[in-house]
Length: 133
Image 1 (tube, rainbow, N blue to C red):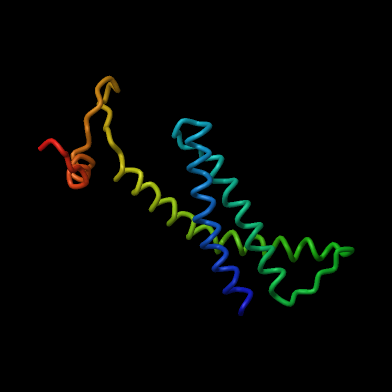
Image 2 (image 1 turned 90 degrees about the vertical axis):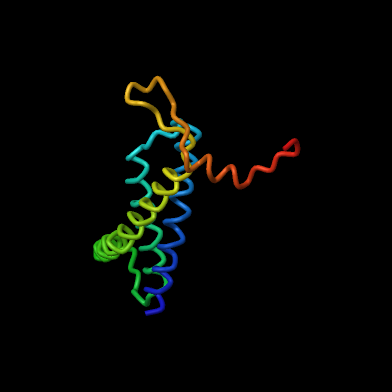
C-alpha cells in the first residue's frame, strides 16, 4: 500500500514538472507551438518513473536473469501509464486554461490585426500605479 501511495505522489509531482519542462522546451525551440510528440514522451517517461518507483518500493522479487522479470515490469509499466494518464490530461487542461487567461492579444481571422484582450487590460490596470496621475 505504501508503494502505491508513493507512486501516486510521484505521479502528481512528475506531471507538474514534466508539463513545466514541456512548456519551456516549446518556448525555447518551437516558439510556443504545441508539439504533440512532447506529450507522448512525457507520458512514457513518467510511466517509467512511476513504474520503477512502484517496483522498488513494493516487495516484488527482481530476477534479472529470467524473462518473467521483463513481463512483470511491463505489466507494472502499463498500470503506471493508466494511473498517470488521467492526471496528465487534467494537468494539461489546467495549463491550457492558464495560457488562455494570460494571453495579451487575440489575432483576427486573417491574422493581420491583433486585438488586445480586455481581461488582460483589466488585470493590468489594477496593478498599474502611475506616478504622474
